[in-house]
Image (cartoon, rainbow, N blue to C red; front, side, top):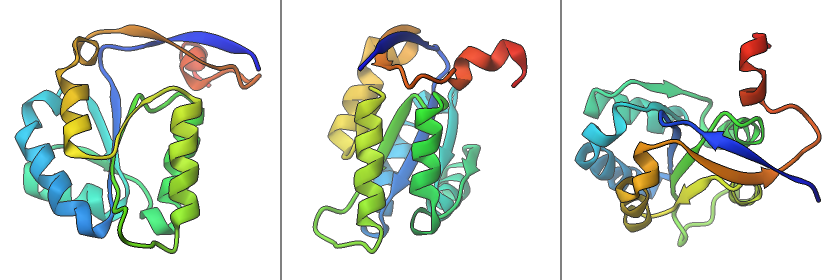
Length: 156
């Protein structure tokens, strides 16, 4: 498998996702870290994005609801190099009808070497890292296609 290095920008794109029983945990975490998050581009799946935007005042781009394809939408964005960090507070005690989608999302996050937090403690570690506030380089799988970030100057 071929690899290549890409530069993660100082201004990150962060996906925020939470299962129903974890939405309050994510809301509490986002509220606590609002000042650290507001300088970055935020997006989230359906209900989660709406809840977080309404309660925190942060601008969070809504995607499709997770069970209706939002998890796959985020996975596609990760493979295109459009997401730098995934904060996904999942419920490990509740079986979800879209569990295969969640597993695929975790798999693609690992494959493309993006930062992934599944609980508040790990999310706190990500935001407290010096890398969070700076540009840095990571090695990813070279999927044989030109990633989105490589195409920005071409307006593709």
